[in-house]
Length: 161
Image 1 (tube, one colour):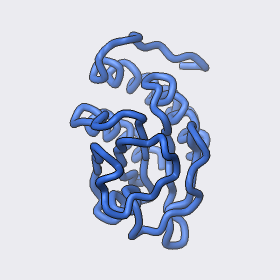
Image 2 (tube, rainbow, N blue to C red; image 1 turned 45 degrees about the vertical axis):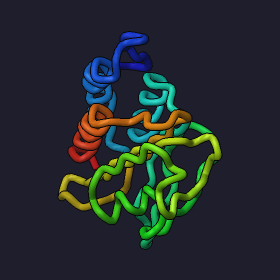
Image 3 (tube, one colour; image 1 turned 180 degrees about the vertical axis):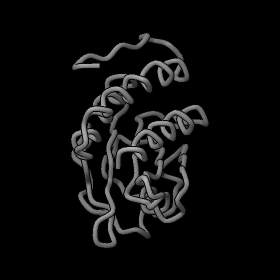
Image 4 (tube, rainbow, N blue to C red; image 1 turned 120 degrees about the vertical axis):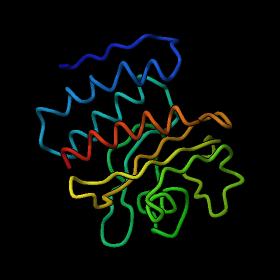
């Protein structure tokens, strides 16, 4: 893939996920450093979809600690029993929040965030190692297409983490 990204501008999300997934796979295939791979994946998602915030939180000492991200300044540490990220990590399931103001215990890192999706990330042994968190300025911006597309990215990570 090199340092370029190709996708159909203004295509539907399913099409964009289908176009960027092989590029992400190729991008991370030759790199063994997890942080470098997470940083490039965040850049691809931010460029392809223009979300408000895209990033990873990694499990460290009983908390989720901020990893590579793009967007406004973020919360540095999240307790596992707090917010959407903690909920998704603890449950080990993708969580879609159509309106963050209606999610009990939502942590406000950016007042611009209106909806959110969080996908658990596992290592090659199936152990939870963190989450992929995506925030949007729009209400109800995420659906099953996003859950499936981001899960496919999580599956790529599972092979290399």
